[in-house]
Amino acid sequence: DVKVTQSSRYLVKRTGEKVFLECVQDMDHENMFWYRQDPGLGLRLIYFSYDVKMKEKGDIPEGYSVSREKKERFSLILESASTNQTSMYLCASSTWAAGDTDTQYFGPGTRLTVL
Amino acid sequence: AQKVTQAQTEISVVEKEDVTLDCVYETRDTTYYLFWYKQPPSGELVFLIRRNSFDEQNEISGRYSWNFQKSTSSFNFTITASQVVDSAVYFCALSEENNDMRFGAGTRLTVKP
Image (tube, rainbow over all chains, first blue to last red; front, top):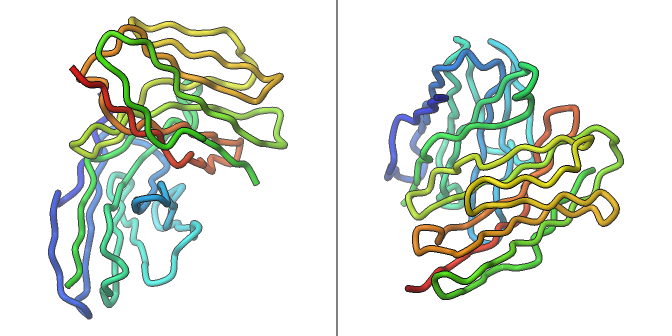
């Protein structure tokens, strides 16, 4: 079974703090993604990565950065957290392997509150 | 750019009723993949099904069935004899060859006992 884990289920931070959200997958997937989910807006892609040390901007990268130093780990960084970044953050991974291409497997999510 | 529309924001049914969740998509690609995910109250998105654009065969898995029609650009999901545990938000998604997945806004299904 594919397993994607996220470092925290719930996180409370203060405005201006630097926040790290960690995601780890154990299926040797090449691709990893970070989304945020807000009521009425669905899932929006923040950043994704097709390979180690590689990153691509998604639809809403402003205020975020990412790091992928190892294949299994993809970190989302909020350099200076703001209240409008209060949201549910979902990490996902996928592979290029035939038969499973493009299927994204999700972690349990991190509900971040910025006060 | 591709687009996915789930027109039903919320559906409420009584247990044992059948329910169909609609999904309409737009894409210019001839090769693409369609997905359904379930998000129970715990929050994790659970993968249900993946369909490629060349396979229009309907699929049945237990009480779940999917109807893919390219002629109407639809990929509808039916739950037969719904149960309380089916209560969740269901997302339809579309991925083109560039691996860029687009999600619909989701349909919240409530199954009452």
